[in-house]
Length: 634
Image (cartoon, rainbow, N blue to C red; front, side, top):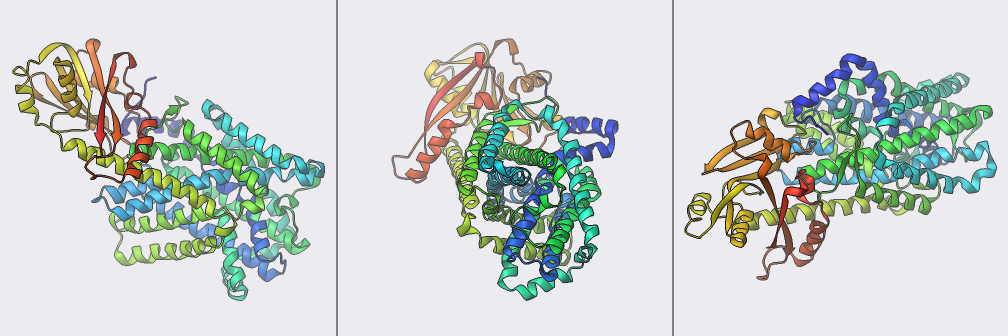
């Protein structure tokens, strides 16, 4: 399948839909990908908030909670992400990993910034497991009001939907993805209209736009108000996706959808639910479904279930994309990444991530059994990620946007204050299930950290054995090494010395092909690399070329295509008679007691053995590939 590589190719692809469909069409598409998580939060947010407030229905409590939700959406989603964060991109890409690469690694490899970015990314995996569980469970629970007899089947039906959702992931979402936008548009129109009708019965809820209601509620409620913040935060759990998915659609379509459709619909839905509570009092079941007439309840439950499936699909796809970014940046073991569609590079599937998420998600449903219980585990991962994003944004404001210290400190300080309050409120949930996303994040972070340490140790170890290239080539005749017919490409990490894989090959075969390429593949800290800057070619000896190829962390390398381009630039390799050589390392601990701790080496060796082979990662032709085994002590 021909692939367009380079940022120029990406721009050419993206310009076509813009010309044909316009900004509105991209905004509609963004509804189905970007806003699924935050768009389904009215299913469970307000009922959780009211429960934390003691189930009271007096105006001070209801309007105070509604005001907190409105201003949380305004400050975090609208101002922080839509207006500020989207000004900062890494070659068009957003998200905490792209932001970390932009300011943390490019600029002198700041360890603390890298740690914050990686742990923030690891936390999103926790969110990726909880979002499908709480979203689908909340929607299916609406059946209990429409048909009370189905109550015993709520849990099995939820698990069945989730299993089906994960089982279809290998097929890709290109076809059903076309329907996501219209379905989510219908969802937002329906929840907005239902909320607006309820508001007409109690129009005083509009007064919650005044932040005084929120401040007054927090002032009079004491500890209860602080606990309520943990529930209020659920209304913005999908806000990080707006920034992370910026590279798929661009900032303008996302902003258009947010201001034109999503934010008004969320406002009407939350205000309508609040109006219902003021009129009828708080209830034990889901307030959201109380807004719907009984005759239309079943269609609403079906629509809500579809919306939550879309929300779950979005977070699963996001986990796939973030995994590929982490692999490209060298922070995760190589995994099989399957391109499921020719229509978009973002249409991918990562089997290991899919099945692990499925097991954790179903385990969460079985353990918590109700969406109200799952709400306790939800929010802490996202609040921690947002807190770390605010820290990175402060640095980006200074170094990327070139803001003054005072301006950056005021804006970022405000975000940090708000995020810290929500994070502190969510910390209270740790004992009630909040520990689950933290454990998941810590596990993912440990894998990232151990993989990076092991890879660094391997590179340092191999670099210490490097031999200068000129003496090595000059000494081949004296060592009885024959230059045989053909071409050879050796994949190596060494850029200036003799690649160790060539030394080992010569030692064992006592021969070397007439034409040799030492190929180094590098992942850049930008998503895409221009074709003009793809590779450097240098002739360093008789028929010995050194090639340094660069790929963005969102690109898929293709060695055959690369060599075909290089032959047009004067590289004398015969592509019809070329053999590729890749080293396969066996990792062991050093016998002298130095190097990494043995337990860490054992874990890294396990990860290394189960990582995808380089031959698959770089698309080497399998019928022309020879793998050379070697042992590396770290």
